[in-house]
Image (cartoon, rainbow, N blue to C red; front, side, top):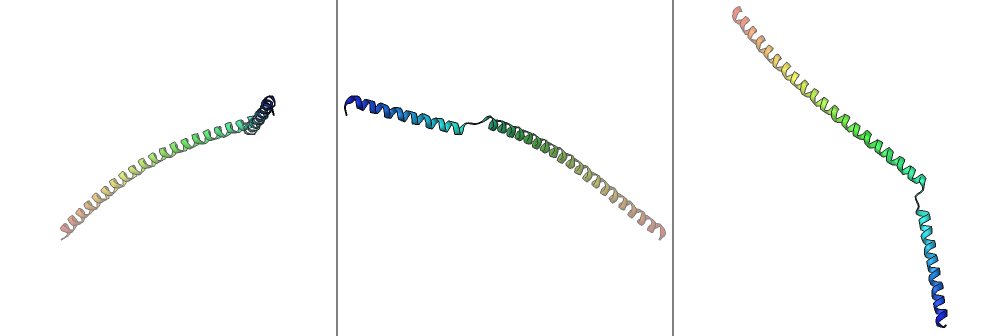
Length: 107
């Protein structure tokens, strides 16, 4: 094999390798390409996720407001209970004073 044949054989081998590489690259690109349908589906999923996050945030806000309202109502109820218990205690004391006054007057 002389020098010209060697150069020609090397050139053919390199050209075939280039063609095989280009074809492999084209195949990979063809199978991994994202289609418009896939992009549309991704956009719908992103929109659904965004709406779900907004709904979750609204639910959290509502629950926090309800918790604050319920805590306030509980505090008010406890204050009313303390006031009622104090009034009952005072009424029992007055009733006891009246009983002892009546017993002293009846003796």
